[in-house]
Image (cartoon, rainbow, N blue to C red; front, top):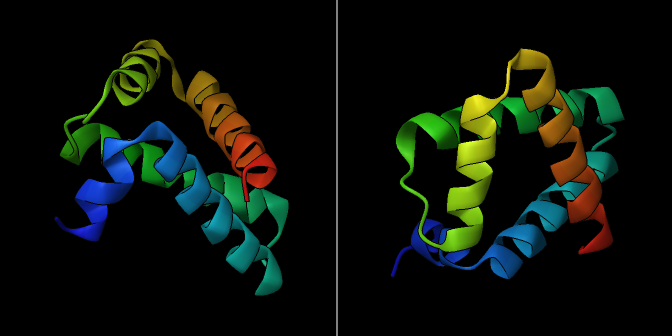
Length: 87
């Protein structure tokens, strides 16, 4: 199973993966604003390219799909915040 499939198959694994990436970005000196913008871009990419592998990811996709750009930015910021708690 590829890393992508493994990471996306479990919401807990996804949170841990994202938390590790956020920590790496912070260590590289990225600002919180930059990290949030990247999270938004990743959310857009996942929405367009990845079929959610579990119910948690499906629910996030559906919430993302009904949100406007500002609401999606809020979701991205909240995912970064959640990831920090799980790193």
